Image (cartoon, rainbow, N blue to C red; front, side):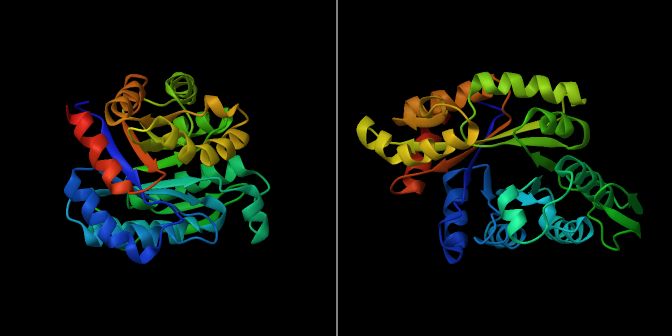
Length: 290
């Protein structure tokens, strides 16, 4: 696994004040990435990314994902540019549709989620490149905005999407794609085909979230994973047993990471469940190196 990046998610249920220590430990263990979450009511993704970046020295930090309906493209670009200037080369910005029900709760559900996501990503990327941006779209209106402090090295903007039309959109307008937990090697082959259909080139990155539980007791691992794979299977519309996980003993988990890489993943981000996530991370990183 020479080119694959292995990262860890800071789960939304973990306390924000524990993020700096977690990030420093993940960096010391040799993780390539740490990804933070922005789900309505939990914590802000941009602020969490800033906390993690400020606590570490080399770790790349991803935002997975900022819901486009919650974010003005101009404000999001300003926030991302600030982090990218202070921490050059260490930020990945994920943008997605957001959960429809949550967007409705706060009165920002768009008429056309696809149009909003495409117009948002296009505008944010242009602003981060230092361009003067005007958009008169179906969902986004921007009239001649240009960042005063654009980053010298614009961070990659990736689309966190699942459905076929959204994957084609990502291939057309984003630097990369972020795939939700539960998708295995066979899924990634289909994802790559849809991204290519949208126009993705060889430089379009594929970042994959995966539920992870590493331990020597198969029954204990299965119990820890069960509520997560059950709920996610319902969301994905597939049987629970078909929800892909990085799990088992350390060697077996490393093999499942390798299978994702072979199917096109550039980055695998582990969302640990069960006790001692950093201990689990250490075990799988050691096994992957071997």
